[in-house]
Image (cartoon, rainbow, N blue to C red; front, side):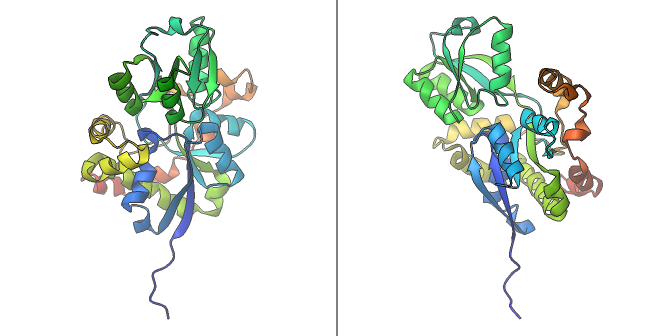
Length: 306
C-alpha cells in the first residue's frame, strides 16, 4: 500500500477582473484554504472580462468563474445553464469613471474616447447607458483589462475610463485624475448547472473554501496584504493596507448568491433583446443551496465565533 496522500481534486477558475472584489478565491488558493479541503484550485485565465469569463465556463475551458450579473442572466436567457453560487461582497461602488485632470465632469467627455475592459461587459454597458441618459456621445473602447485602461489614461490615449478603487487612489495621487462617477458591482462566482450535477461534492468543497478565504480576508491582514500585492501586481504596501481596510467589512461572512435590489433593473435592461427577461427570477440564475447548507450546519457560526 502507498502512504502517499490522496491526490487533490483539480478545479479551474477564470477571473474576469484583477480587482480586490474578485480576489478572494485566488487569495485563498495561495493561502492554502482550498488545498486543506483537498482541492487543487488553479487559474488558467485572469482579467478576461466578464463575458469571456462566463463563456469560458460554459465551454468547459474552466469550471467556475468570477463574473458580472449580465453574462449570467444573458446565458440563462439564451437557454444555457450558468448559475450564480456566491456573492462575495456587499453592493458597493466598485469602479469609478476616472478622467484626466482637464475633464472635470461627465459632460466634458462628449466626443472623447473612454476606456472599458469590455464595452459590452458588466461595467461597459451601464456606463454606456449612463452616458446616453446624460446626452453624452462618446466612443467606448474595449481595452481588455483595468491595467490597460490605466496605461492608456497615463499615456493620454483616452480621456477617461473606469478603474477599481486601488487604481483610483493611485491615479488621483500620481496624476491628479478626477473621479467622476461610481459604478456598482453586481455579480459573483458562477458555474454551470451541469457541472454541479456531475461534481456536487467538489462544488460544495469549493464554496466552503471561498467562505474560508473570505474569513481569512476579514481577519488576517498580515497574510492577505502581501498576497493582494501579488494579485494586483502593485508593489507599494500602503495602498494595499487602504484597500484591505476598505474591503474587509464589505466581504460577506454569509455570501448567499444575490443581485441585491438590482434584479428588476437588470431585467428591464435586457427585455429589448430578450422578452423573457421580464419573468426572470433569482432562482432561475442562482443556486443558494451550498451557502445555505454551510449556514444550516453551524459552520459559519463556528468560523466567526458565533
